Length: 432
Ligand SMILES: [Mn+2]
Image (tube, rainbow, N blue to C red):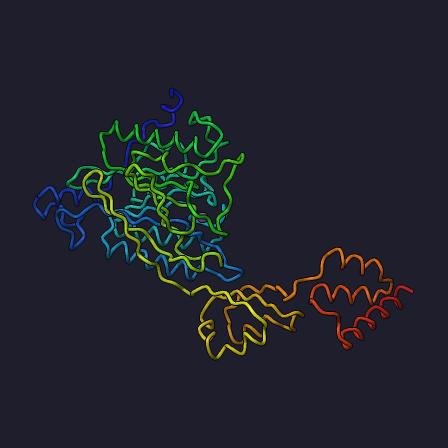
């Protein structure tokens, strides 16, 4: 553990000035001394309130659809919630951006969101996820910390909590960024698995809180915790075949604010530690069409008392899926499928032959159709049969016809045959 000591040099914990003000109020000090720091409406005895969110994936698109305006609307809403709900801190559990090098407008959006929270004196604890670059996201962290924006992107900061206080005493907020076992196992004295490095990080945090005599802890972490339900939009984080960790690695901590899985869920082990995924604020794949996207509001009372509540986030458009023949589906556009006009839509066509310009026709009725799939009734012919027929064909126009049949599900009609014949002959003339 000697090496670990070096990981946590001088930098002590960070105490929120705003909360110091509130704690002052709760301790019964004269109002004038701390009024500037006390949000209106708070009163003595309210629990410490943390707003937990994750997986913003700023800059992501949904099948080509730009999500940034919807992400901006979410961040407006989040700010309003943080103020209205009188959150004492906002915790962002990783995958802030969608990519290590995010687009400039995504960077500008994050800058604005954090500036507003800092302006309202609401402390933010933000960790890097597997989509974020720890170095880029962590740039300027010592400066932003002065404004109450606490970025935690490296192992060296594991033992540097943000400390808030109320009449029950102090609450320490720690951040465990996404830990790549190969990169941190030596520093942490851990093995080459997520379970091992997370376990070491959690042990370090427990020891730090004990040393500070702080009984109440909130830990943000970005990881795949065993038992969690995955969906299609999370990037696999398995390394060496072991990607998940049991929730029990967090035993003894108060509230663990997880990021990584995009569906909100409770993965608490049985021992009383609350371990939850807030889920992403927006759906990033059609596999999430039935998710209720939300943020999690966590109230910490006396030590051991943790209450979590989910607040549904605004829904830009519902996601819907339909399946059937193109003409049959379009015939229902005025009746039972009328509601699809406002939805992001995935359509699976079952026509035996691929219809002409299906996407254009779908978008005339349902402008937000994003995904088109073909699953012809009766199934496609087998690849072996296709190859047999291809091998037997010698006429180039016939081979082109087989290609048309392969991609559309039906042999070319007379007009298409004529076009193919003309093109083949034109090419043959040129070559000759
Ligand atoms: Mn994610």
